[in-house]
Length: 248
Ligand code: 13P
Image 1 (cartoon, rainbow, N blue to C red):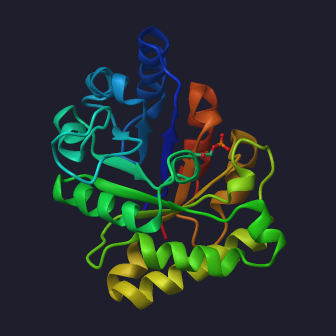
Image 2: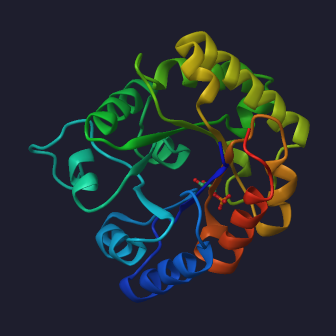
């Protein structure tokens, strides 16, 4: 399977620059199997989807509500994302876990809602710096994996150590390899053969300059990119690095 490179634009993207960025990524993405995803803010999904139509770049949301519709002021449901052209949705990002008190149970319900709507969930896990310093990184991540995934999960995982996000710091290759191996073991335990195939993305300060050294780590199935996804040339450099490795 080719490595997947997902751009998480977070709360960035007014109409004109969002369209420009999407156009530049689509133009540079080339042909071949779709292995790139852009996740703009909700307000830009329809416009970005229209720009990316016919390209090898897919669109995703950054969150969804567990219910398909109803009295939830300010929320967006999975069918709404699908309706405007999204194929993926990021769930349980650490910024949502921290700022919106999202716990594993809620992320699990959102993953169920996403799959029901025909979206591919990208479920994020990752330890904080304090948890790592206390030597608890592995049990924390293992418990997030166990608690955040529904029994029939068929999506994508993203390991994003919270302290690596936006900090310019990345774990050592061995640390990423160790955590991805742990996640893989848990996925195989929970989902059998299906768990062997699920991509596990790495996220946290991935740039064009370090992408190749991260993509070559065993069990890294691609990247979830924040800041560098806001610059077309950087995002495309990461995509090129990902594409330079044969599928796993
Ligand atoms: P940065 O790439 O800016 O570190 O962000 C990572 C991230 O949170 C992607 O979801």
